[in-house]
Length: 78
Image 1 (cartoon, one colour):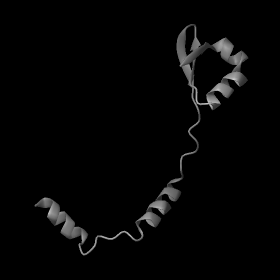
Image 2 (cartoon, rainbow, N blue to C red; image 1 turned 180 degrees about the vertical axis):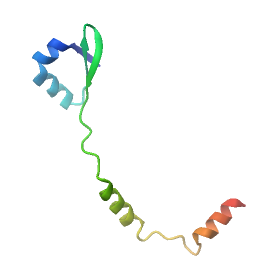
Image 3 (cartoon, rainbow, N blue to C red; image 1 turned 30 degrees about the vertical axis):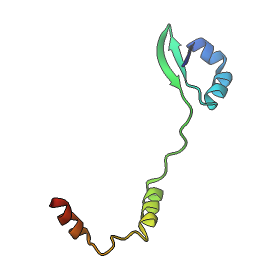
Image 4 (cartoon, rainbow, N blue to C red; image 1 turned 90 degrees about the vertical axis):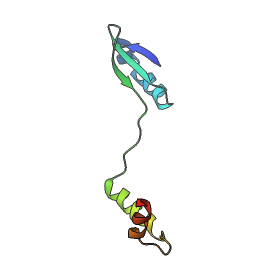
């Protein structure tokens, strides 16, 4: 992990951002002490509504065969 001083980070921010865009992480220091970390963006988190919709869609067609949930619970207790 590369580290750069705060002044250098301010001066060369576009170059540092290009490096981060390739997957590199850069630590920014102030008087030798790490104070910040530039890391690649993770992308947007999925909206909860979209996740719920996907889960509901995924469960269609899933069956328990001839068993009910109650049967499975009772089987697990034995």
